[in-house]
Image (cartoon, rainbow, N blue to C red):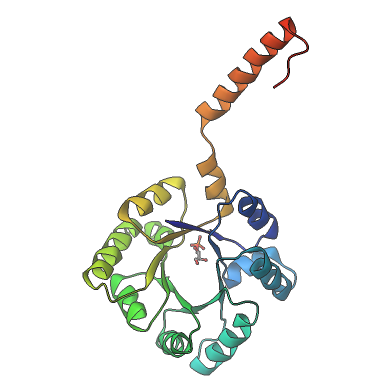
Length: 222
Ligand code: E4P
């Protein structure tokens, strides 16, 4: 399963990329707005740091505007995936951009039918938002299971399931068990995945024991 980071924060992107954990990045207008500044600078920098797919989202809501923005976004790098919303115009733009060889991520997917239609339009990725479904009392992970089952029934679909709106590490384990292609994670979730209290305690004990040994042999080194 690929891991994308769901952020426009350069510090977090560099931090996790240096650990070799990142296969790509997803952004959206809210994440750009959270960072402030000129989004052009962020988009330029992110596409330089990350070699894998970087989803950059259009803000137009009609077809021609999406096409223009999609082509402009693509100028940031060959690894740019144009993110369009799950609307009739979004799917029309998805079809046109995909047929021109520009990969598309269809975002704001909340049902299996929407995922099916986005795949038919040629999307490289569909982004089902599981946390937002959980928030309104629906089972977000069940949607991932349904989409996975549908896509497996039709091997001609090459569309990848990019699990979005992830809230905690259990979502990640569940998505991996289902066999989702990609999870996109807020930096805080990736931080939590790195940690375990027994790792911390274990390391403290190793270092304390080493200190005891060192007090008897002050010159030892590893
Ligand atoms: C995905 O591409 C979206 O940017 C993101 O996962 C949305 O998550 P949220 O529901 O936490 O805003």
